[in-house]
Length: 281
Image 1 (cartoon, rainbow, N blue to C red):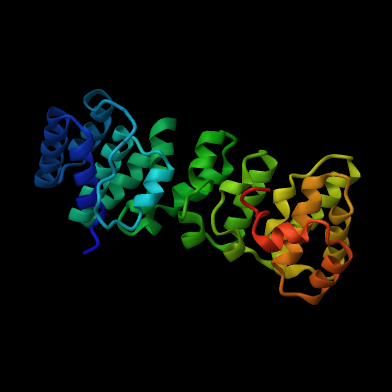
Image 2: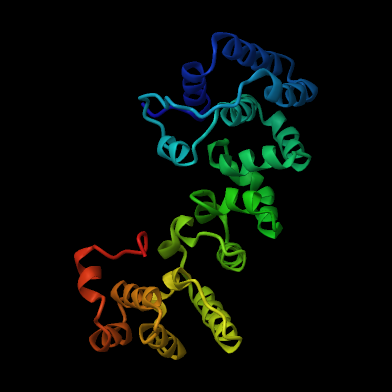
């Protein structure tokens, strides 16, 4: 049986906290649920930093939990999971806590906000907190922005195409690692492709480089002016750009892309064999 977030988080916290830490946390949460007090919720959330030793979780348990691998990828810590456990427990217990949690996030400090954004997907009905995820797209603080954009499954589930495009482009503008954005092919769309092409032409006009990873979403839109764009990177002196162009065309279902591959096949064997992918570009 697949566990709820509350049950799974309780299990891994018990495995990774000291007995005293775990008992304090469980007791504090029980009090919150008993009193249904917003004040108790806020006090407990605030006290976590002094009551829970922040250390990497080294035992994620053997339970069947939907987001277990995601927690591992994000190197979840005991303090992060304790804070999320408090929120999850309150929200699973009563809808009365929804507004309180929303308000708590609006006044969170940077570290708390990063935790919330990274593990937003664990909360019951996480769409109720989309305002915080979208607001994070406006920041220039890399840790906050990357908390929602990198590895995170939330954007591809709950963002509109416009919001997702904004996130992808902001990642490029901030020169963040585009490889860490999940579901790029799934979220690719014609509007994003047009913007990528426009941005590329601006960079080329200013004699500035473009991260070759930036082209990843365009595979199934290689037509019209974009054919010339991809041919340009296939002919580039930059080997990574050549490889990116090859990957774009290889993963395309359009004849225009296949025709480009016939003329520029230097890296095609490695792509076809699986030795060259977007992950190792």
